[in-house]
Amino acid sequence: MRSAYHSFQKSDSERELTWSPAEKSVARKAFDRALQRELDGVIAETKSRAAAIRQASDVWDLERYLTKRRGQIDRRFDYRYSVLIQVFGELLHRGRLSEQDLRGLSEDKLVAIRRYATFLASPMSAITE
Image (cartoon, rainbow, N blue to C red; front, side, top):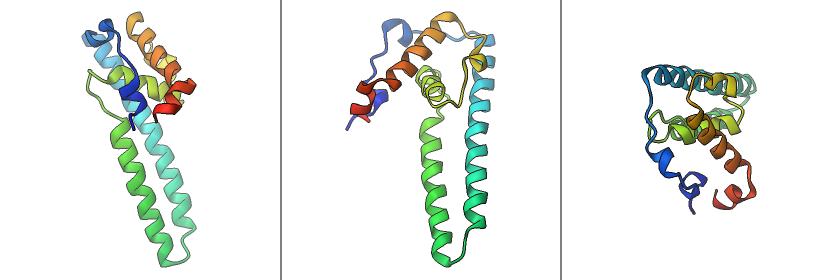
C-alpha cells in the first residue's frame, strides 16, 4: 500500500525550492525542536512503562515499544531538503510543530507545508496509509 507521502503530488515549484542560509537555520531549529518534543514524549512514556514493570515479559514489552518508536522516529525525522516540506507538513499536522516554529521560512514554503498538512488531515490520506 502506498503511503500518504508517496500519494501526495508535489507541484513543480515545490520540487525546485531553494533554501537560503537564513531559512536553513530556521528549518534546522524547527526540526531539532520538533525532534526534541518527540523524544521528550518517548522518554516520559518509557519512564512510565519502566515504573510499571512487574515481570520479565514487561521488560520485553518495553523493548518492543522502544524499537517501534525508534523506527517511527527514524522514518519521520528526515532532514533532507528534498523532503523537508513533507516532514514539516506531517509535524505540523501531528502538532509537533507550530506555524510559529516555522516563522522565517518564505511564504512559498509555508504554503507548501500547510498544503501537505491539510492533505494529511483529509480523508484521502487515510485511504493511502
